[in-house]
Length: 309
Image 1 (cartoon, rainbow, N blue to C red):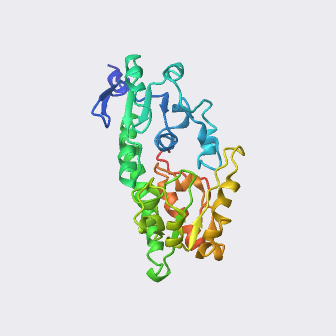
Image 2: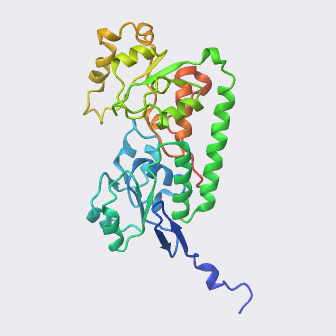
Image 3: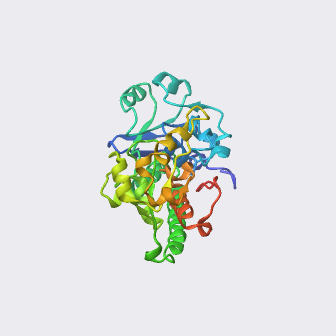
């Protein structure tokens, strides 16, 4: 062979196998180039692991500036999906479909029978599960090194935030209650509760023992008597009257004795961070700290951790 001639075997990408959370082994002859994931958070995770051009489509919510911190990044991806059918997914000709386990798992066998490579992952609800999902999606994308880099970036960001939080005296720690459009979201076991702990903030729902997706009564809200109320801002592109929803609390005569209402201690945290269950959960931690403790934690609304150079 002539000196410097390329080695054909080296030019071929190495095949690999990934085992998803259901124990299914998926063989990849090469890293996928037309990826679809069936949730907003897994789209955000994947966009920290691969270039946008490797995404065949992303969730429509990535375009919503109230809900998404990656609106600019999403502009590089032309196709949008919401809750696609098997036929709609097949029409996009993906070489990887990621399905979170809280989604419609009944379509998984049909997609596999059609010859598509499907990886089922956790619909992450806490930092441990986010880290597991980053690792699995990185493996599925053929980018395990980027997965490890992304985890290291998360660790570094959390350490930076916690160094600042450690300087806040315990006597100055505040209690918050999240008023969410998602009913009982925000109690013990939620990603919001975990983010509050990292942010040095007392989550009033959890403090009272209200579990995630247990509905908090207004009597319980009075009992918690938070220092600050986090109010929702999502308006479905102007199609939902979020102001009317907020007035159900702020104008309720039975709540007027509450400290937060008496002092008008209301905050509107950026929902693209505080509901985030991708690697950008870390910015949710910082957002909570910013809304409670001020400018030492201030950040823009387009922060996004990515291991893509």
